[in-house]
Amino acid sequence: MPHLDAAYNLARWMTRNEQDARDVVQEAALRAYRFLDGLRGEARPWFLALVRNACLSWLKANRPAELAGSDAAAPEPADPETPETLALRALDRRMLNEALAALPAHFREALILRELEDLAYKDIARITDAPIGTVMSRLARGRRLLAESLRAISRASAPKVHE
Amino acid sequence: MTRDERERGMSEAIRANADYHRAPSSLASEILAALPAEEPGAPRRRRFGPASRFWLAQGAAMAAVALVTWAVTVAWLRPGEDERHAQDVLAAHVRATLGRHLIDVASADQHTVKPWLSARLPYSPPVTDFSAEGYELAGGRLDQAGGRPVAVLVYRRRLHVIDAYVWPAHEPVGRVEFSRDGFQLVRFAANGWAWWLVSDLNRNELDDFERLVAQKN
Image (tube, rainbow over all chains, first blue to last red; front, side):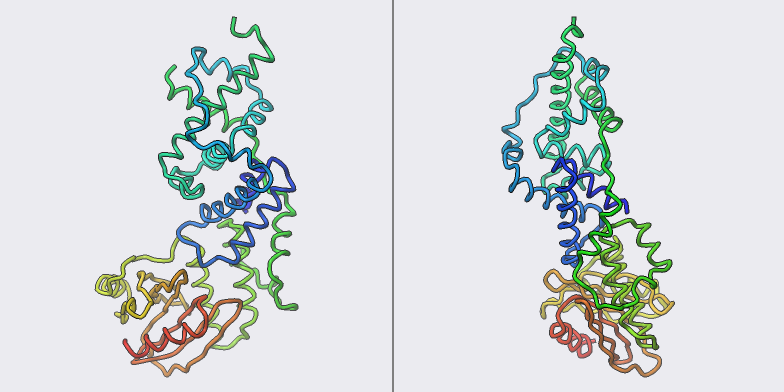
């Protein structure tokens, strides 16, 4: 059931723990069952939109702070003089996963849907209920934020790297 | 290094390194177990044949969920000519609502839908828009029921979809209705046409729609 994997992956990244991800997916599946007549077009984005909404409700109830930053309020990372390659070279899996998990919710969900589910911009727009332009800028900014935080981590762990 | 190149590099780094969390194997069964309870003793598991593999290949958790609805409905209908046909029609309806293939020709204009269907079928089905009565023609598609191609007119009533299967009634067709798990089905004949209507609409409204179809076509 690939859609179930996609659903769980999204929920797991948004809630950051297994049990809450299970609950969120289960709730979304029940809604899918009840509102089957609302299905338009392809099943995957439709179902993922239900999962995403369940994630959003969960975040509102449990971690409202992660939703606080609007697109405008999110910090614009400085254009770095050091190429990202430095950060990427020093990158390890664990660091990247931690940095990705720490991104504000809107950037995180866009990146998960794009990079891990390989969804089209229009599907991500539909799932996250945002215009395509917003999706694209969230993706771009999310990647820059991620690079920024990786740089910060690698600088902290290996201060000599840049010299 | 341009900004675009850096972004691409980051994109590749995420794709290569970020964890993909697969659903635990127990999750699917947990979800199925949590669905509204079905009639006990319905032999639905044994009915998951090749059709179930098709759905699972489609891969939707919700496909599995819908399959339960469908399998239970199918299990409920006892074998017999009408029932077999009802099974076909309902299966086709669920398949269409679930997949991307609800409508082949999207138009509220009967003069667009009718020629499209007649060009692809050995008959020219009656097509009427009932927008004025609250049943909007959304389009048509070709489907299969009873092992032959059949015209389906797709109507919308609020958020509900009505599939109207229509073909020439060469033999007498009696009126039969079924309803199960939220789906209403009715078969009837009018003016030389046999109809199967399938919807999740309530019975009263479907009856209402049936009268329109019978009178105005």
